[in-house]
Amino acid sequence: MWTILLYYKYVAIPNPEKFAYDHLKFCKEIGIKGRILVADNGINGTVGGPKEITDKYIATMHANPLFATTEFKTSTSEPAFKKIFVRYRKELVTMKYPETLDPNQDGGKYIEPKELNQLYENNEDFVIIDMRNDYEAQIGRFKNAITLPMQNFKQLPEIVDQELSKYKDKKVVTYCTGGIRCETATALLKKKGFKDVSQLHGGVHVYGQEFPDAYWEGKLYVFDERVAVPINTPQNRKILAQCLHCQTPCDDYINCTNAKCNKQIVICADCRVKWNDGCSEFCSQNPRHKKDVRAMELA
Image (cartoon, rainbow, N blue to C red):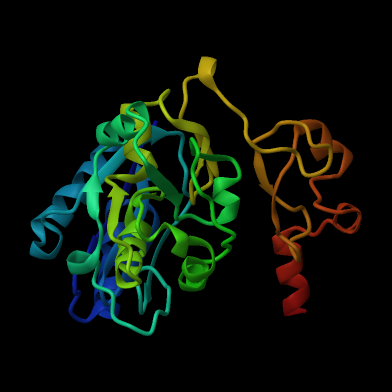
């Protein structure tokens, strides 16, 4: 079994492009796999490997003054990555908002998983908003959560104006997978005049470990080869999504068999066979594996 690490840290990184290059070299040396983003304003990663490797990774990160207080969320799974990628980009969470948002200074206050449960149990007057993309919320979300018609985080400022402004005077709790998007999202909400804004500390990842059968419903979408992981115990499993083709309750994601399409779809086992893993009749009849498409492009 592997240990999976999920982490982020908003901090100014001097010469981030060089840091990304050096960090990739370090990751290859110790043998850790996964995906890491390095930006001018911080680092975000999901990595994994045998425990001795992930322990070494955490120790090395904590030894760097820039990342000494970084919180690492851990879980176990079968191997979830085949390679290591460390990439630089300008923003850690790309929103392209014209005004400067500093999550460390402007973000919402943290609410712990136990405190969120108390809001539900006491029938508090609050709204809980899912700051993830719509395809993530399709297979799992908090009870009574407001989900957004969002395919990309860059859409959030417009969606806040169009969909959420009526909640400016409400008690607002936001959540995402591990917390990083909420750092920026709550700063945006406060900038737009929301009065009482909190974010779930540690995101769904931590909440599910502490309270697997409380107020979370469905699976958690993750950005690795697992795609979706269960939060609830088997006896309390709740399926929220439906198969694209037959509408049978289902929460299994795959990528369309046609690599030119590559659309991510929820599809049941029977329809995988019937539709040849395709999202449409055209894709079902025109399966192209990625390596075949790449070969055609190079030809």
